Structures are given as structure tokens and as C-alpha cells.
Amino acid sequence: MKRIVGLFVLGVAMASTAGKPNFLVIVADDLGYADVGFTGSKEIFTPQLDALAKNGMVFRNGYVTHPYCGPSRAGLMAGRYQARFGLEINLTYSPFDLHSGFPLTEMTIAERLRPAGYRTGIVGKWHLGAAEPFHPNNRGFDHFYGFLSGGHDYFPDSVTTAFPLLLSNGNPHYSANEGCYLPLQRNKNAGEFNEYLTTALSRDAAEFVQQGDQPFFLYLAYNAPHAPLQAPRETIGKYSHIQDPRRRTYAAMIDEMDRGIGMVVDALRRSGKLDNTLIFFLSDNGGVTSKPGHDDENWADNGPFRKGKGSMLEGGSHVPFMIHWPEGIRKPGVFDGLVSSLDIAATAVALGGGDTSGHALEGVDLAPYLAGAKEGSPHDVLFWRVQDGSAWAVRTPQAKYLTENWGGGKAQLYDMVNDPYESTDIVDRAPEKRAELAKLWNAWNAGNTANVFLQAGDYQKKRLEMYDELYRQLKEAAERRAPVVVD
Ligand code: CA
Image (cartoon, rainbow, N blue to C red; front, side, top):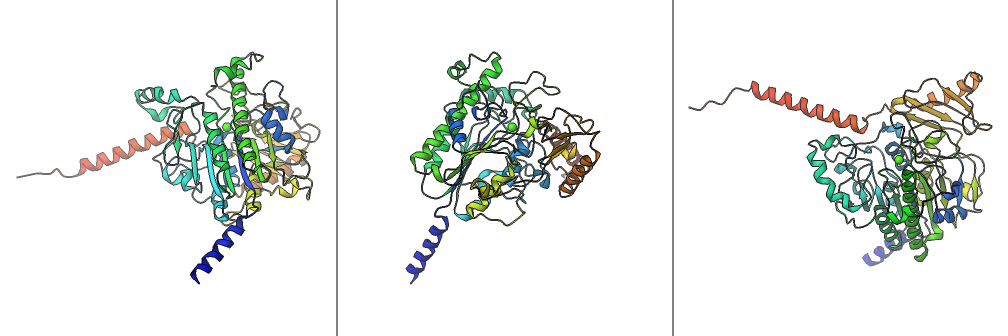
């Protein structure tokens, strides 16, 4: 009898995952909108991505929720605007700090999909907290190969040679590149690192996707092509047609990423999983262009969009974005409606039968749009907010209203139908439109939490001040104690 029950339970467990699609979410880091072939680059070669785009759906109006790394990744991972839970800065790599991480009150996509029978993995950049409670293996991921910090050096040699440098500067807490030179991790142990980082991550992702028959969710979070600008010499050599040496190296980094994506796609094809895998590809924010204090950092090309990483103008968060899924896309092509990185969680949880408990997801299930069952814009409105609303933006299919980051200044309003590249500010000419958009943003913002965290460098200073203060108090208390007297 027991045996029969056992078989029955096994049967149910197997049936529950049969036919479920796999999810591969590939995130590039600081990739310029126009720096891949499928968005128009003639300078940088991305044949693997272009092939996926040709057979997939390219979103011409695809957005992330924040114009830089950490908050954008937090929103993607939660499927909720990160302002809902006060994560509006880049979290410090801070392995002993139990307060700095993706809040435990939020669920990751992995935490939602694992109960539905998914094998879950993250390869690459986590950036959502380095202390034990925030470790990917404690946030729903069966598998982790990569790094907990916001960036990493690309060559293994730097890891060993840089350690003494970091330690000898006396105070590693202030290093802007904190975490960049640490060993990679494989789950909770040190991980191997024997080749160019992008290739190592791709190799591990290719291995992950071909294992077993259980459906999987893999978050392949490249740090490429984020600084430091480093690439193999021979790949840089392919880009001698690019004059600026920084852009030449950046191009080679994208080239390496594209080749790595090809390794993963090949693994999917060989294991017969390609047709029923949703491959999402997007950048976590716009490409790096000049901004106050960083006038010489301008190696990316965001195409027709103004400015780049950090900006509330389109260059900050309008990113290359596509889905490849032969079994679910009725007709490959381009899609004009507003799409958000929030939609990744919503789509995966809907298709995978994931856990919908906890906070409500804020994205849209894109599957009906891919199948041709629904038309139009998945979103009526999208919102942005940085650091407590010091800068903000709201866009509908028709218009966009914003204040710029870095000191802001006067609010700007654009007609996104006739002026999608934000060339003419009409804020003084359209008071009604301005009021309508302001009302939308205020209503959305009423559901947000004030920013909880401090930007990485500020946090490190604050933390040391707090330690100094704690030591001072303890010392004072110690001095007040009566001395021990022996007789
Ligand atoms: Ca980034």
C-alpha cells in the first residue's frame, strides 16, 4: 500500500512539471542600446544575439526600472518596483552586515519557481547583499557560480596580485572596487577561475542548462561589458576599425559575451531544450556616456536616445530587450508596446505555475502577447525614482515627464509619439498633460517606501563612523566600571 501511495505522489510530482518551459534570463551590464547588431550596431559583432533576435521578439520599447545596476537588478529579481521596498542604491559588498541586502520580506523569482518544480541557478553578478541571509543559495537558488559584489575583474591573474594591494592600503572598506578581486564563489565555497571571466560564466551556464530533465530557471547575470574595460588581446584585435581604445575594448567585451551566449544556446540545442526555453536578453541599464564628474567615460552608444547610465532620459533605462522562444512566439518580429524588466517575473511565474504568495507582482505576463492572443501595450504607464525621488520619471505610450538625476533642475515633458528621442521639452506648453502625469506618479509613489540604504561609498563611511561610535561608548562604559582591587 505504501508503495502505491509513493508511486502516486511521484506521478503527481512528475506531471506537475511536464511541458513547463525553461527560463534563461540573460542580463548584460551597462550595455549601450545600439551596441548589438539587432539594435543596429555596424561596429560591434553579435551574431549569436542577432540570430536569437531574428527568430524571437524584439521589444523596441523595453525598459528597466532604474538607470543603474543594483536597484535595476532588485526590481527584476522581485518582479516589483524596488522603491516598494526601499532599495534605491547600489548595495555595498559587505559580508558581515546583516542589514545590507535584498530584503527578506521580498521573494526572488527563484523562490517563486522552486516550489513549482524548477531547478534554479544564478551565474555571474549577484549584487543584492553579501551576508549569509542574502546569499543566493539562501534566496531560492540551488546553484551559484559567480560573485556577490557589484563588479569583478575579468582576468584570474588580478585576483592574486591585487590582494596585497587591497590589504596594504590599510582600509579596504573604502575601495571603490571592493569585491572586484575576490575569488569567485561556487555556492558557498571558493570557485575555480582559470580563464576570461565572461567565458568562465558562459561555460558554467552551458553546463547548467543541459543537466537533467527538470525545468530550470537560470539567471545569467554577466558583468560584461561593465568596467573595468578588459578583454583578450586577440578579440580587441578584431576591432581595429574602432579608434577610441576604450570603446575598442568595450566592443571586444560584448563580442566575448555574444560568443558565450552562443555556448549556452548550443548547449540548449544539443540537449533538445532550445524550443521550449524562454531566453530573455536585456541590459540592466543604459550604456556609459559622459556625466557630471565622469566626462571622459563615454565608450557606449545608446543610439538615438539621450544620455545613458544614471540618467532619467531614455538613455538611462531604455535598453536592448528581446525574448527567444520558438514554442511560444507565433510570429517572430518587433513589438512596440511598453515592456518592463518587471515582466520577466510575471511571465515566468505565470507560465511556470510559480508561487504567487507574498507581495503582488507588478509586471505583465507577456506570453499572450508573444502568442498573438493580445495586442497593444502591456503597460499603460511605467515609473522611475532614484534615491528617495531626488529624480523621477513617468511615461505612458504618449508622453514622458521627468526631472533629471544629478541635481535635477526644472521638470521636463516630452511627446513620446512624435518626439520619442526627447528633443523638444514641452513642459511649459502642456500644463494639462503635466498635471495628468504628475498625478499618476504621485499615486504610484504613495505605495513606495523611503529609501532604506546608503550608496556604497557613503555606506562604508557611515558604517565605520558607527563602529567608532560604538567603540567610544563601550570604552566609556568600561572606564566607568570600578577597578578590580585585589588584596
Ligand atoms: Ca549596470
